Image (cartoon, rainbow, N blue to C red; front, side, top):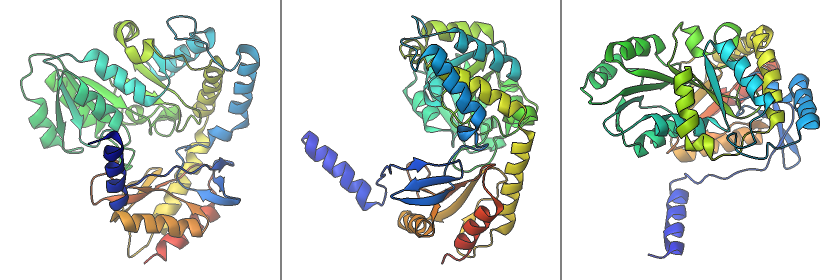
Amino acid sequence: MSWSQRISEALAARQQGNLLRTRQATQPGESRLLYWQGRHYLNFSSNDYLGLSHDARVIRAWQQGADRYGVGSGGSGHVTGYGVAHQQFEEQLAAWLGYPRALLFNSGYSANQAVINTLMQKGDLIIADKLCHASIMEAAMHSPATLRRFQHNDQAALQRVSSRASGGEKLLISEGVFSMDGDTGALPMLAAAATQSGSLLMVDDAHGIGVMGEQGRGSCDAHQIKADILVVTFGKAFGVSGAALLCDSQTAQYIEQFARHLIYSTMMPHAQAVALSAALECIRHGEALRARLARNIQRFCAGFRSSSLHRLAVSGAIQPIIVGDNQRALQLEQHLRQQGIWATAIRPPTVPPGSARLRITLNATHRPDDIDRLLEVLNAWH
């Protein structure tokens, strides 16, 4: 089979299954709006939970950082790319979250890949929740370690997997808030299982950091547990981009020496680190923003009464509306778009077959009438 045939058949299969993804060149407005083809839409697909991507304090910090340091870092952090702004933000982040060290990465995807690929060796065991993010699963599957998955948040299933003998080390992985179902990881159960089985506990808190816990410290803080390895990302509640790994000093030094994702990537711009420092201060003092987000979530949950759609019973900013059929999910997406609402249909392989959905995300900048309009359209869908 030629390259052309292989590609054509793969694309045709995606098209036939209503699984073809298409990027749309939108223009962001404020966090609650976006513009597309000359029209504005209420944006219910963004992970900008606190609206910090358009916060004047964060924007001004980036501008000031660019004026001082330029717009690029110019190299790997192991050459000349790592600067005082990066160091200061790492120290600020580590102190806030209560870890000896923080290491900056360009994305949560690369941070998760770096941890798993660097730490795990042949004979080791990775124990992961079945709904963990693709970045975790891909790294685990390509790791020389053995991967064992357990049913989502299932204590009995976790016990069966974690009690198996292993000649090497064990790494237990979950998420703080699961990105597609919107529910929280069973973190106290996981922490107890990690202790009992002698595993390191790794938590990806991309969707919990900034939103949950005291001062927005995230899911682990909210559940009063301490992960051995914590990954946080900055493209959601921080409103910027990038990620960080939080861990002890020895692990951080090991990652610095052996993580190819860190060593062979250009460091994030210095100005970005300055903006992230400003965003962290906004989060630390963001009780009013989190309270506004909580009110918006409550308003949506209380007002959802659709007889033909199923809302997963979760209480966070991610509100999945399960449709099931791929084509019907696309039809609902188009119906909402016609009504001036932007909410994206999520289909396999991002979610399991038969569970296509609209992933509604709420943020602190949504107004009550925005949510009421969304509810009106969803509740009228047949």
